Length: 272
Image 1 (tube, one colour):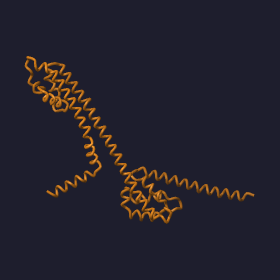
Image 2: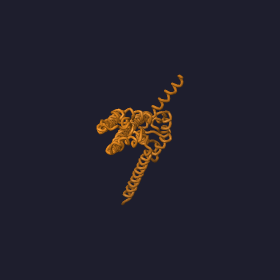
Image 3: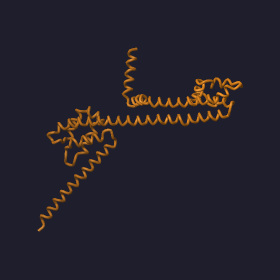
Image 4: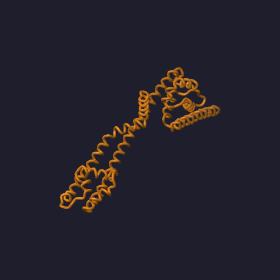
């Protein structure tokens, strides 16, 4: 028995750690207030409808003619009347059967009952559902934004820790690091890579893209910035690729400009 309780507690703890399960629990807990107001509004509509119906039935009940037993059973007092109206809107009984005894008294009761059914089912209940769904959607959006924000904060914290580790090792190279040394440090600090949700091969691929031509080292800050951009964003790799292509083009333009300057100086120097 103890093992069963312990297993049940573990299962509940694991479920509570799940994002979707925690979201449902928090949503239900925070939706108690709008649910309460919804029931209060529905109860007010039922109360007012019951009072109105009893007022309309009073002349017929106190008349000298014999009252149908179904009317007494369904509408013979505040309690039975509000219970009958609740059955009509909740599907407990077909409302055609509930209005039939009233139709024997007057056709106006049928019209009144139809108006009541229409207003509650197509207006009040839909409004309550819309308010509840709107509240839940707003709460879920706020919760998701907070979840994303917490994830970003954690990612930035892990990236800063990794940056400090790499900077300490790259001080003698003026904040730059080679691919071989980077792979060794990332292997030693694989826990930080797990927090960033990146594997070592991806990090080395980003490192290679940031390498300039005829250069074996990459700036640590630039590498960490690229990791943060890629983390949690599948399109981030395209951003890093664009950065790499842009830098390579700029580097080639600079190299071409240097060649042109050298060629121009050579031509001017050979000019008589």
